[in-house]
Length: 487
Image 1: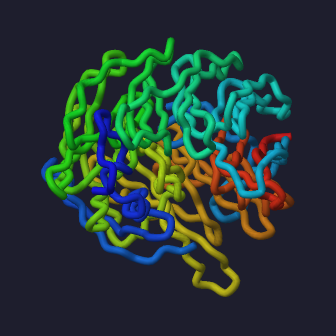
Image 2: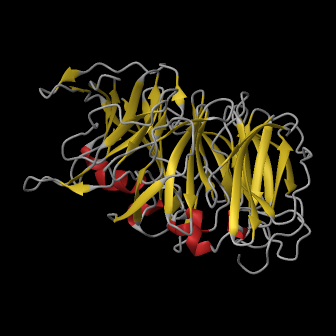
Image 3: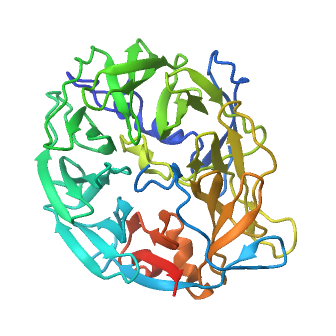
């Protein structure tokens, strides 16, 4: 255990283990290292995973990773001769540049769609843009830079945003913003923990129902969206701490207790209104939750940071084990970035998609076998009841592919742009048939490649590529948003 252990209100997982160890397994399959994971047969017993190390290359939101209704019919298209229908009617609609971005770079968390708006947080502002034209519809200016933001929204389109105070290194303040009205609600400082190692580093925020879950370097709390008042939680026992919350359709809480050098962790579903526990699922000894992929259905990433092992586990609605995903030899690699080094958020990863019965995960990039073929990868679909792959991997020849959401029983994926070609949004049926929904122009491919690492939202037949980190004076890296759609 690192120096300065938990105080009266222990903080997140960074108090449980050394920061560097947490970074190594920051998401079950991390950016510089891939953990090829295998588990049991999903029989409801021990969900302890097994893993081998291999080298890696290089509801809301409306949240693109969870299942969405089939509200986006394809635009007129034609067959390209390879069994996939192509749509050539999309163009660049508008672009926004972060003019005041510092040369050292700055994180810009927070991208949402609501109605006919695309909303983006950047620096000390949250701005609502007309989705079709990019015109600014409203602006909320904060008394500090945005340093955290909830991925999920309430049913009436509110989000919670964290912003800096006296120090740019900490994220001690939170406020609620109504995305539909463009209005700022209450704002307040997060409560003090009372510990001697008190800090507000790496604040993580999420929303479920009308409740906010917040975790930071030395504390955690539940707040009401309505007025910011705290929802009382049971006293945290000595030697125990909260790793974080997962939001969306359910509210999950991950915590741990230490007995000597051994950690015992649990995940609980909470009643969002009262904060009371509905059920508790105990993890194998030494493991902890480090990623909440979805809360409806429940899909979690768990790791043992000492043994460098991890897995992805699905639970049913009562907290019983549903399955452990078994990728076999596939080197699964969603986008988890490096934020896990200091962040207390359990919702950092992207580049995956979850429906009620499947989870879609990409593999690491590989160079094609044919001369001049470029980098490509695969998307594997896993049955959440069995944990097994559902069949043939999903690919686009010569392209890297990323899951960006689901529509009914179909996957939405983005075929990433090449050096001289644009990207493409494609719908993939449960039977594997691909249908083009939108193709971005070749002319913007270099900037698109940079923004592929940010937020990718397909909404009302438009694709929004939004940066989650901008850097001034560095070409495409100062681009905040690119919007594409039918012209």
